[in-house]
Amino acid sequence: MRPMHATRIPRFALILSLLPLAASLAAQAPQWKPFANAADGFKAEFPADPETSKDSVPVGATSFELHSYVAESGSTAVYVGVCDYGAKGLAGDPEALLASAKTGAMENQKAHILTEKKITLDSNPGVAFEAESDKLHFTARMYVAAGVLYQTMVATPLTEKFPDTARFLDSFQLTPRPASTVPATAAVTAADWKTYPYPADGFSASFPSQPQFEKQNVPTDAGTVEYHSYTAEDASATLIAGVTDFGAVLAGKDPDAILQGAKNGAVTNSKGRLISEKPITLATNHGLAFDLDNDSAHVTVRVYLVGTSIYEMIVASPLRSNYAGTTRFLDSLQLIDRPAK
Image (cartoon, rainbow, N blue to C red; front, side):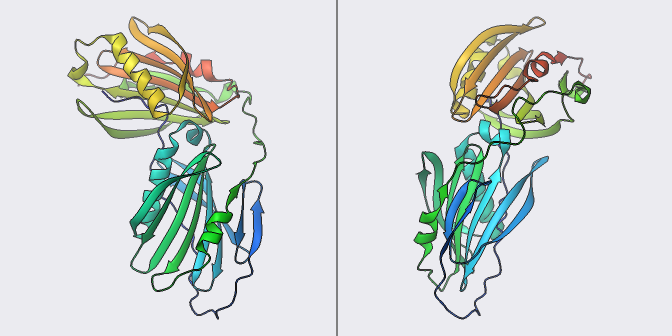
C-alpha cells in the first residue's frame, strides 16, 4: 500500500541564470565584497556586484518565483538562487526537494554528477555536489530552510580552475527573513469559496479557488496505483484533496489497519511527529483524523476508506499559524456517485 504523503513536492526543473562566460576579459584580481539581501534571507561574498533577476518557474500546475544573483570573475560565474515554495515547501520533505533541485539542475545544464554528499547549514539539510557538462565544471551546495530552497554554485570551464571556489561557497550564510506581509490568519472570504464536483473520483469539496488537478503513478508493494490530487493555495496554507483507488488489493483488509498505515506513512514521509488522532466516519465509511507537526509546518488530515479507495483531505500551514478555513475545507468533503465504468 502507498504511504500517504502529507504534501507532495513536484519535480523542480531548476533554472540556472548563469551569465555568459566572458573568457576574453583581462585577468585581474576580483574585488571581493559582501552582499546581503534581507528579503531573501542570505548574505555572501561576491567577486563583483552581482546581477539580480527574477524568473517565474513552472512546477506542475503552479509556478514559483526564482531570485538569481550572479557575478563573474574572469571566465568563472558564481551564483546564488533563492526559491520560496511557501506552504508546499514548509510541509514537504526537504530531502525530496533537494534531490529534485539537484536533478533539475543537472538536466538543465546537461551535466552529470561526479561526487555528492549530505551537508547542513545552521542545522538545515543540504547537499554538496560536483558535476560536469561537456564544457563546464560545477561546484554546488544547496540547502532547504523553512520551505525555501537556497542554491550556491560556481561554474568554470573544464580547462580552468577557480582558486576562490571555497571562499565563495563558505561565505554563504542564512539571515532572518522579515515576517510575511500576508498574515497566516488572514480572513477567509466567503464569496471566494465554491464547491467543485469530481464525479470521476466520486467526491465534491469546497475550495477558496479553482484547485489544480494532477495525477501521478505511485509504486506500491501491490503494484503501481494512480494518485489524483486537487490542490489550492489560500494565504499561507495549502489545501489538498487526494484520491487513490487501490482496487482488489484492499478487499477483505481491516479498514482501521489500512487507515493506521496511511497515517504512519504521512508521519514518516513528512518527517513529522503525531500530535493527535481520533477515529471518524463519513456516512458509514471508516475514517481517521490526525494532526502532525514537522520542523516548519502544521498538517491537519482526514483520511477515509471508501470501498477500495482512500480519500485524503489535507491542510498544511506554517507552525504557530491558524488558518481560518481549515474546518470549512475538511467538512466540505461529500461522496457523490461515480459514472458507471
